[in-house]
Every structure is written in C-alpha cells, then in structure tokens.
Length: 416
Ligand code: URA
Image (cartoon, rainbow, N blue to C red; front, side):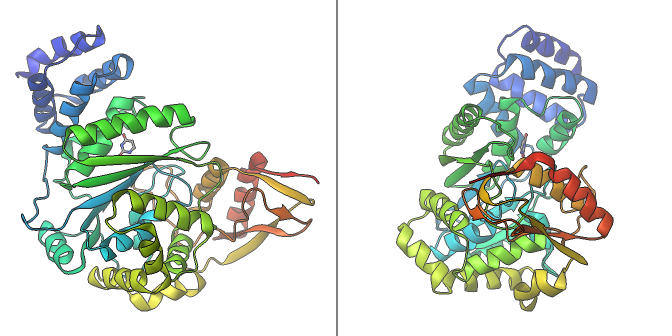
C-alpha cells in the first residue's frame, strides 16, 4: 500500500467501516518501516478508539504486530511453552514465583516481561534489584538457558514487536491508550511472539488496576482470550480484584524479598493462593504438587538457578531489603484508632509508592529499589490504636512526608 492511500483507510475507519486483513497487515508493515508518519498513525489510532475493531480485525492486527519483529521458534520436541500475563497491579510479584514453579513442572517458560509504569510495578524492575541480574538476553542465550533450566525472564529487545513499541509510544501521548482493541493487540502480540502453547491472563479490576470495573475487565479478558485462541494458543483467564495490594509488600527489593520467602514456603496467603490459581490453569501437575514445590525447596532451587544463570548474586537474595537495598528512613504508619481495617486502597498506595521513588512517572525515570511499603495489614484485620498498619521505607524525611500526604483518604478503619 502506498502511503498516499492511508488517508482513505483512516476515513473508512473513522466512518465505522471495516478493514481487510491485507490492509491491516500493510498498515503495520508501512508504519514499522517509517513509511506512515506519526500524525497519520495517531489519527488512525483515534479512529479505532472511537469505532473499535471487530474480532477478525483485532486478531489480524495482533498477528501483524507479532510478525513485525522476531518471533521465537522452539525445537519440535520441546516441552509445552507456557506463560502468564497480568494487566498490572500494586504489589503484584506473582511472576517471580509462578515462572520457577511452572519450570519445576517440566514446562518451558519463555517469559518476556515489562517495566512498571504509573502505579503498577514491573517484573524487570524487581529482578534488577538483584545485584548483577541481567534481563538483556540475546535469542541464543534465551534458547540455551531454556534448554538447561526450562525458563528465562528477560526484557523486550529492539527487534521484538517493534510495531507495538512505536504504536504504544504514540498512544501514550495521543489519548488512545484506553482502546480495548489496541490494548488487546499490544499485549497479545508480545505474548504470541513467545510462540506459546498455553497462556493464562490475570486481568485485574479495581482502584489499583487499569480496568476499574469487573465488567470492563471481563470484556478485556474475553477479547484477549479470543486473540489468543484464534492464534492457536490455549488461553485462559482469571478476573482478580485489585482493591488492596497483593501480599504484604509494595516496592522492588521488598517484593523480591516477599517472593523469596514465598519460594521458601513462607508466603502470605493471598499471594500464594493467586499464584497457585494461575499456575493451575496452565500446569500439567495438580495444585497439591505445585504447592508442595513451594514447601519442599524445589521452587526455591529453581529460582536460585535462574538468578545464577542470569548473572545475579544468589547470596544477596536473603538480605536484599535488609542490607543490599535498605532505605535510610523506615517508619510505621499507625492506626489512628481501634477497629477493623476497611480500606487499604491499592491505587492510593501505588501512587504513594511512586511518590517514594519505587515507580516511574515517565518511561526512562530512575527507580529506587529500596523504597516502598512492608508489613501491610489486610482488609478485614482487627487493629488497635497506635498499631502499625505498615512500614514506610523512604529515601529521606521529606520523601516520607510526601508519601504520608499522598496516602490521604486511602486508608479507612471502621470503628468497633
Ligand atoms: N500493556 C501493554 O502492553 N499494552 C497496552 O496497550 C496496555 C497495557
């Protein structure tokens, strides 16, 4: 398609028409090779935002974006490839435990993860809090490691879904991120490029998630699932609430510490439950065996092997938040009165963690691995006046004061 024809396609979509598979593939090819300028592609994204795409258009867009770069190819006799994708939450460190657990099951886990942006954390940032851990693996390194260990946890490279990289950057500054079909194509193109057999999606809803209502999460989940199944990946999903943070920590090194404890059989109940719920959807083994691997050291051994293989310092793992990345100021946030903890708003805690430096306001911002929250009490807990609801880990007194201010009305105790 010559670039001069693109305005007609924009107009067709603007007016509610349908694009053919060939047209969609051509758009993505021309955009990736810089033949379509950003202003036209932004206009197209806005037309899609208002008019949507039907199921076939969405599946074609997803596949075209997958094929814009490198697609993993695995040996014919390789074990089933499985992965999980979360739409992002606060305190969501599930991947750190799920990936080694699934590898213990004899499956291959080629996990390509992202960084945190906004209030939701990212697996790559958490992994990089481990001294030496290298998330920049070549395709060859990925293959060698997965053959040896059954998993790798890496970041996106320049040639992996470049169409998504370009389009996401445009959407970010043109008000077109919240288009369901563009979100589906963006997420699933990256997952499909891993050449998976099975995928489980953790679609979160609530104040700490991208989707605020269960209904919206359900619609997104169904769209993601259909893009997966239409591209031959057995795709399952769970809708999970993100009203309060997952587990008892928020912040990079603090979350790795909690994942380490969980891999050693000492994880908080909500985190362990969600991890097993998700694993069960794609594993061969039953839940009891998966849970057993958390208890008997098998999953921990797999995780330390992963850390070692990717250059990380295994000896740092058990002291990551107590000495490697210890925040200078650690202060309790206490209950102002007795009662039942009613709200510990994930959105508010996520925003306060960004204020502390645990997350990014903009892509490329530096991350402070040490800061965040630990010892989070859970909603429904009985608390007494003056009892800590959690500890705040801050870089300075000023940062602590700003975080306390950001916590605002996010915490409610029902007097009893
Ligand atoms: N995550 C992605 O990778 N893409 C989106 O469009 C939204 C969330």
